[in-house]
Length: 605
Image (tube, rainbow, N blue to C red; front, side, top):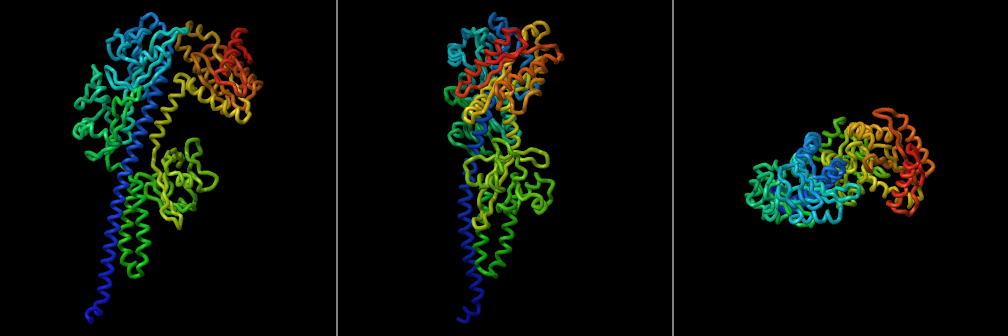
């Protein structure tokens, strides 16, 4: 008994540390198990995101390839060459060279197919003259429907992205213009983000590739991208393509490997796009949130043991805090802690973007919220009516991808935003801003190329159809006036025949610029044909539209640059409830009357 009382304090300390040790061991075990679950969830989410990005970029490239094919197929000279089967051997060499020098399309192929399905011209080989109808059902479909088509395909030469456009001349079907693009430019874009790619055809599809363009294979699988690195082809061969495609992701050779299925127009898998990301570049945002949250809860729990216990744990906790702070500081993402009043904490990455501020105190003196830097733009997160409305939106909708555009010291950035509540009582939030600037810039460039006329730089016919539908809907719903102007250049064919197509192109570009500068910011100017244009005028009635058209007519007539020209104009006002086709027909009729009545005039329907 004396021994017990003598060493009572010693036993209390030993018992305490035993309890603390057991508690910590259990705590650590639970955290590790949960951390592993979160890690696997992060891999799963990353794999899904990569698959979505690959699918989006391929769709965008399909659309861009189709847009280019439509532009090239509309050339009048080409239509005559196809009609009389007189396509020069190097007809498209200059076009292909320009694409290689000035665009992402470093290697495009062009094929011309006559109305019977016979190949008249291939830009990548001297081989032609074979009939493709028997081996390609897609050609039969275009022959029958006379509609454009864009899809992935495994043909005789490669696994590629194809766009097919029917060639029509004065209403007569002459054949098909086919533009073929490849995956190398997509691979290079992913490489800029630190991701490597290997594109392969399935075993079945590889058997149909009789003249392999890349001459690269992994066993029986044809490799479609010329820039597929050897180390990643070796990884696929070592772990087996058949095994990797069965799972949403695999971890091998210090890489996260994500397979993305490539499907043809009939939704049949014809290949796989494999993305490789180094494990150390993966950002476990949720794991960082989880560990930070459990540190805070652990500190709260152990503080109840009293002053003496607090002193002992203080040293331990401080070490742990420093450890996890180092983890957060090494993150490439901006991480801040917020209480809906001000920014409480920020990691080192925060100051790499906000370089003007040396400390968080300096930032808080000038800004009560990071939302002060938000750029209000459709498609991106808005800061809302109250100061932290945006944070409520992010937190209450965790399954939605929230993107924000920021202007930081005059430079534009794009971020993916996520938030989690780490302290319920004090309402502390952990907010992560992941930089997606390069992805957004690339995506916006691709989208812009699909809706923009390559010669004049204004919107194209595709964008006109999208925009007029939106404006007709608003006009009908809110009872607003809406008018359209259709115009074209008088005797434009004569200009081309007399001065040449180069001068014709300069005329189109110069006078397009004059009209564009004369319009209001709310107006939409589109090129819908060779020398034919259409202008959408929201909140504008017919009388106002006539004045605008006549002003444009006079401005064009007075300009003498390049060569003097005149333009004819047709004007009409939208009738609530009418179809887009009927509206187009009415304004087209007005333009026709302007032509019939002497040109260089405005007619109203």
